[in-house]
Amino acid sequence: MYEANDELLRSHLYMNVINSLEKAGEHITINRNVLERLKKPRRAIRVSIPVRMDDERVEVFNGYRVQHNHTLGPFKGGIRYHASVSMGEVAALASLMTYKNSLLNLPLGGAKGGVQVDPSVLSKVELEALTRRFTSELSPFIGPDKDIPAPDVGTDSETMAWMLDTFSLESGFSQTGVVTGKPVEIGGSRGRDSATGLGVVYIAEKTLETMDRSLSGASIAIQGFGKVGMHVGIEAHALGAKIVAISDVKGGIYNPNGIHISELLRYMKKNKFVKDFPETTPISNEELLSLDVDVLCPCALDAVIHEKNMHNIRAKIIVEGANGPLTPEASEHLTRSNVLVVPDILANGGGVVVSYFEWIQDIGWLFWSEQEVRNRLKEIMTNSFKKVWNFSRTYQSKENKYNLRLSAMSVALLRLEKAMKLRGQAW
Ligand code: NAD
Image (cartoon, rainbow, N blue to C red; front, side):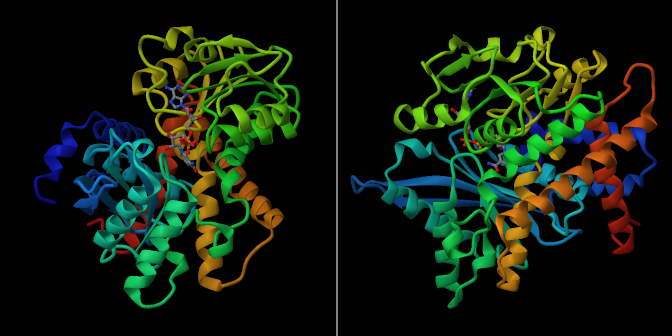
């Protein structure tokens, strides 16, 4: 895979994924050839995206799509628009999708894409032009049977609608199954918006049960109140949890007796951010992370818990709503300190599970009720949690009693190994 490999090896995010692969490899008996193959993505695509800006200037953006592995089914993964997007970041996230889909027992491979752009400074016309040109450049490589993009940071259902339209125009007929996370009116699934957050809540509930605790009455702090964090708040509150702190990019709010979520949602319609919400005290993002709560849900950025602040963590359980919110050092330290860290590939898998449901519905042209989506999501999240929990008990070393990250990776790798052997890919 040309010089992109060197670029990947210089990316600390990509190296983190390789390290966790190696670590899991040390704990389970697995064919070395499988690990070697998984260390490199199958395909890495880099495209230039010229866009005529509103002031008539042409700006050329960098776009990426990395297709990591498709042993289990078509490639699947989101599209991120962010200024920090790079080949290394996209490749790391693409490989995490391979392990996530394997762990969740979905018939899908792993991919990720992105454009190096700050979407907040582009007009809607510019964003649409960028998305359409990016889709056009990717169109030989994507499709309902090949690779199915979805929204991620900086993209949403409207971005997916533009991708669907461009791909369909180029194919000559409507292909709704080419993307997921699109509006319900054009083939989207009911329940997709809340899926990731709801999945995080199901996982928090199961993790609490391992301590003979119930979600009802448990205290929760949520960092990030976007597509993931907001639904964690709504769903956990509905099940009786006490949301004591919430933050976003502008800062946080705290109320030890619980924040009134529906009032907050009304407040945010006008104010956009959680800041200054009545009957709460201001709290910084760092303070929120160190609260003494039952469950901490980091649902904003990667690497927010690291070597410098990991000693301040007092939560009993951390459920990773975001991708990679703990650095490897922080994750290991907290696991050793008996904090139950539920890793991203399990905790935030609800989004791709309902994306999978959406894809099935599009292929079958038969759409499910929201309740059906929620029931099926719960079943998959619960079963996946059980698999990881049971596996973690086989690592009963004194030091690392419940290493859920290592267990999740191991479960994912063992399924992939089996499939690769059956397909004759692991000699
Ligand atoms: P989003 O853009 O909708 O929301 C992000 C939230 O984080 C916003 O509330 C924002 O204000 C807040 N934020 C940004 N910078 C912050 C900072 N410095 N400190 C505190 N808060 C900050 O994004 P999202 O879709 O909710 O994704 C969040 C994370 O979850 C990402 O890591 C993403 O990859 C991951 N994820 C998302 C999905 C999904 O379905 N959306 C699925 C799996 C994983």
